[in-house]
Image (cartoon, rainbow, N blue to C red):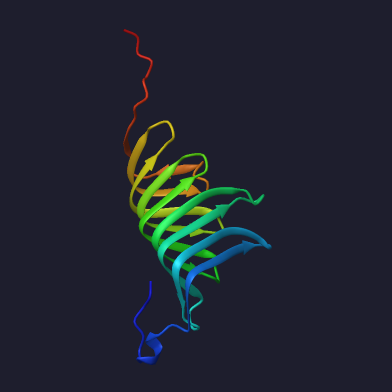
Length: 160
């Protein structure tokens, strides 16, 4: 998040843009494309602050789109190629899995998303799982919910 600076001159960003796009790549291949209403950056920080209607598209090793994240704001760390999303965070995989939480971190090194906050996770089959804490790969195929509980509409094949 944006921090308060010492002098009044330091309170203004060195760069500011609207309807911004940041492309995070690995070996020349895009792994995440982040769009936002506004982006601010200070020269002494190695990160950008994305504000308003943040949308991030994620791609796998073959360059195929796998998921999309929405949030109120996000911080992109250029040195580590990581990001943190804040406020009404939702990530939806192309396979139909949906995670909702208030904060989420994406680590490009491990290609993982994680949060320690409360989560709601929906499957295409109609299951709704809740918990506190979550880890997964970026396409939400291999996930872990901590302190889980949930609801399902599936039958269990019980005979009359």
